[in-house]
Image (cartoon, rainbow, N blue to C red; front, side, top):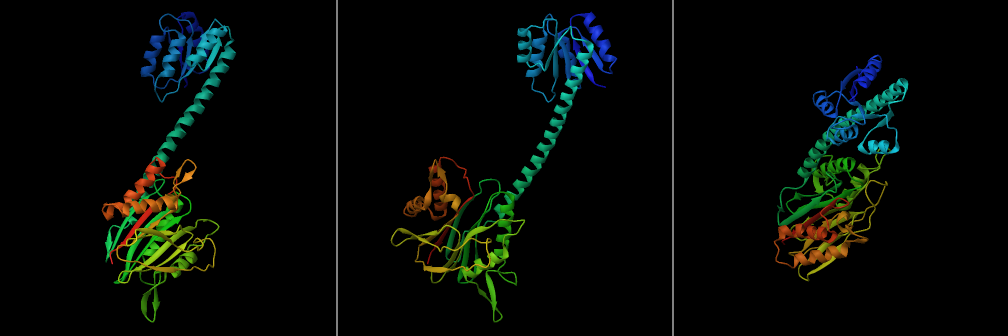
Amino acid sequence: MKSILLVDDSKTVLLYISSALEKQGYEVIAVEDGQSALEVLTYRKDIQFVLSDLMMPGINGIELCRQLKSQVSERYIFFVLLSSRNDQSSIVKGIDAGADDFVDKKTSVEELQARIRAGFRTLELHNKLVERNKELDAAYQTIHQDLQSASHLMEQLLPAESTIQNVNFSYVYKPCSQIGGDMLGYFELDEQHVAFYVFDVSGHGVSSALMAFSIQQTLSQNLGPDSITMELRDGDYCISEPAAVIDRLNRRYQQTRNSQLYFTMVYAILNTESGQLRYCTAGHPKFLVWRASTETTELAGEDNFMIGALQPMEYVGNQIILSEGDVVWLYSDGLIEARRGEAMYSVQRLASSIKAVCTSQLEAEVQARCVFEQVQSWQNKDEFDDDASLLQVRWRG
C-alpha cells in the first residue's frame, strides 16, 4: 500500500482529503502541523509522498518543504503544496523551496488524485534510478578493484634487479591511467650479452595492458621452440639479431578484425665485453646515447615501420660501439610528447635534461628519476596524458 503524509491545520480538510484518498487505496497519515510531520518522517522511513497545506502556524508548508528538501538523505520525498491562495507569489515561493507540485484547494478530488498518481509515477522512476545507480556503483567498485589488481600485476612484471654483469639499469614507468600499454625490461641472454627493450602498445587501458602483458611474456621465453630472442642453429641455441626478433613479433601480433592494436619498440643487445650495441627500432622514437668521454648526446635508431600493422615487413637493424661509462637512454613517446600549452617537451629538451644529470654529482641510480621529474616540472603536473617510460642503461666497460 502506498503511503501519504497529509499535513493541514484544519481537521475538516484532513478528514475530507483522508477519506477521499483512503477510498483509492492509499494509507494516509494525517497530522495538524509541520513539527508533527517531521516527527512522523523520522520513524516512517517508507513515506516518500507529502501533501501539505501552505499556511500553517509554526512550521508552514514552505518551511516544511525547505527542511525536507535540504536534508542529506537517500530518501527522495515528493512534496505537494495545498493552498487556497492560488497567487503567483505563493507558487513561486513554493517552487523555490523545492515543491514538486502546487494544488489549489478548490481543485476537484479527481484532479488531486490524478496529480497524486503522477507523483507516485515520478517516485517510482526515481527509486528505479537510485537502485540502478547503486548497481552501477557496485559494478564500478568491482572494476576499480580489478584494475588495481591488474596494475599491481603489471608492476610485478617490471625488472627487480638493477645490475646484470657489468651493466647498470635504472628506470621509471608511469601509466597515464591505472594500467597502460608501455612496458620495459632487460635480461641476460648469455655470459656476454644482455638484451633490453622498451615498447608502447597503441591506446590505453585494459586491451593495451593485456597486449603488453602478452608481449612481455613472449620476450621472457629465452629457450625452446617458442623463443623469439634465441634460435636453434646446428643443435645449439644462438642469439637472434634484433631485427629478427622484431620481425617475429610482427608476425605473431598481426592485427585482426577483433583487434586493431599495434605497438612500437626498440630492442637492443649489448655485448658486455666489447661494448657493441646491436639494435632495431620499429616505429619507436630514436634513443639517446650519452658519450661520457665527450659529454655529448647522440640519437640512434632506424626508421622501421611499427609492429603488428602490416605483414610481411622488412626490418633493418644497426649497431654502435659504446665506450666505458657511456649511457643509453630508451623512452616512450609519452615522455617527449608531454605538453605545456601548445609546446611539447621534445627530444631536444630530453637530451638537455640527460646532459644535466650526467654531468652532475647525482648518483647513477637516481638519474632516471631526476630526468623524469624534470619533465613533470616542465609540464606543471605529475600526471601524463600518455603512458611514459624511461630506461637508463649504463655500461661500465
